Amino acid sequence: MKTWKHINEEQRKVICSGLAHNKKLYQIADIIKLDPRSVSKEVKRNKTPIDFTDGAKSNCSKLNRWPYVCSNCKNKYNKNCIFVKFKYDSKIAQRKADANLINSRKGIDLDSNEFNKLDSIIKKGTDDNKSIYQISIEHKDDINKSITTLYRYINKGYLTTKRIDLPYAVKYKKRKHNKKYDYSSNNKIDRTGHTYLDYLSY
Image (cartoon, rainbow, N blue to C red; front, side, top):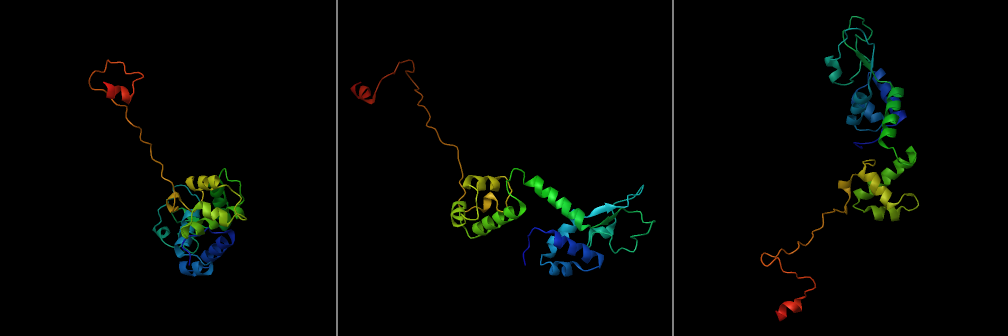
């Protein structure tokens, strides 16, 4: 089972339904074939506050553990509850995820499907210890971006693959420059045009 994967809209609907039916975390994760940690993070990240009442507090201890929302809390409809209530709405969660995706990938001339395909190809190739050049050659029919563009995507953090994952990433160092010889004595002598032969003759 993968520990990291983008959650799609259908999976979010299953999470929402599972919360409504009081399913356990591992049960929901098993249904959508994701690691329980991914499901847990998704709910915590995209839960939505509701029922803002004057003086309401936001530190209900029940929200510190699964399901992190008030879906099946006995005080869900209790007007005397002093805490802000939270819910998980798949539609709202999807809108937030889409907005984050757009903001994180500005400047990329690819739609969602094309990007995910490219991301998958690069990730699989680097996992097999292949260079970006080699991956680009092997998948020339699927990758219509230049090698320079692929490196730019990686350096800007757009792809799952990071620069540290590249097997042959070039490390640039500042070039060394030879220090000009500093004459410690007779530095007032004009040596313009003098050669080594002149020195030998001297």
